[in-house]
Length: 372
Image (cartoon, rainbow, N blue to C red; front, side, top):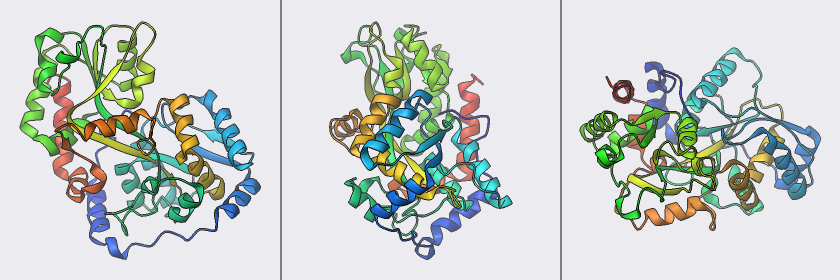
């Protein structure tokens, strides 16, 4: 997913709200108790429809297939009206504006990364749900519930994970031998790859690296990469460049593997610099018009059948299930000596994410990527 200029930069007021959110963790409202899964199914049947913001890589022609999956799995006919995610920060801004205006939510559920879930929560826009008994009844791993230890009491119930991604390198093994695959950002500045590398444009991913591996190192490496003639573009555009054979290496996210490959263009993926992974959560809106249908949809997507659906139709994996490439990446990462930046277990990182320091760093990196 890509961002408009400054779309990810939080306001000072929001930063204050976020710090309060952390400080008051034990006092936050508990998730709303849920009726049993059987009642959720009955409620979804009565509602008959749901409006969603699903993964950006989910094609619209896959929506009828998802409706069929829900029908086959739960016996519920749901009409899904989906608007794919394009810029999650804008989605959250719009949702918070609706909440403040007292307007009904446009979407029953939204797909968000962790930082945007927190931003929506600070704006009072998402409904806490007691997911734990529901996922247990549905046979879903408990790790899908946002807020499992160590965030119990603060984030518990704000979302349910249904796919994950890792930041790393997509590379063409026909032109990049395994022994020569770059292992660090500095390696991407090697003249041998001049004109053959593309990197994703969102400056936030490099700001995250700054926190975990050092600002000076990351900034200097980015400057060297830019001087080496890299292409800086959206993940979608660099995937297309790769597929056409214009570049051999992409610094991207793992959910773009399927969109980057073809019979003529094979793809391999590896982590670089650090173990950089994140989950995407379905989050229920406060005042959702179809709350039961939204919950059932998310339970379906978070299930093993749902993970297979996402993999086949959106190229997105789920590390909670074996036989899934995201699980394979996560397993391999444990054998590599990499800095672990698992953001959801690091409160200090979350504070940094919404800090003035990070805001300035994102602005600085934006200029570096433009060669300034």
